[in-house]
Image (tube, one colour):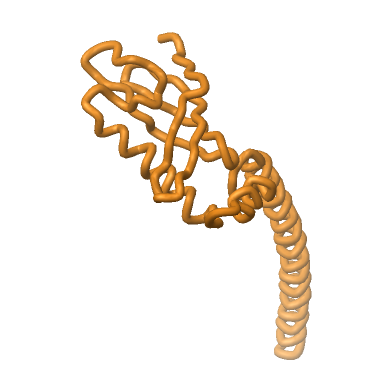
Length: 165
């Protein structure tokens, strides 16, 4: 009786070990497959996001080699475009402090609130596109800019668009 009990216990322990081994080996293979498919999906989504970012920044001074060359080949004094971008944005946003609003929105003040530029993007060596609002009305403006040798920047409104309420 003692021998048969030990035999049964040995067989049960052996079966439990076989089933446990099979369970964990299949679980490990399943986890590896899941990890590989997840990594592939993440890599694909990163590539998609990078492509969208590249497409969105196609029109920008940072990615426009011809516009960068325009500043580098300036006969009088070469201009570093990396330093020019924040300078131009700063000079344009400084006009927001005007009591009548930023004059480079291309729109006159329509009520008690003034139009100010919220965000601007330098497209190339000559143009800026900007978003403006007074809190009630929103619009966009295309601006020409000219960096001067004395460190100042001149602006000129090309066209302004005000969206309907």
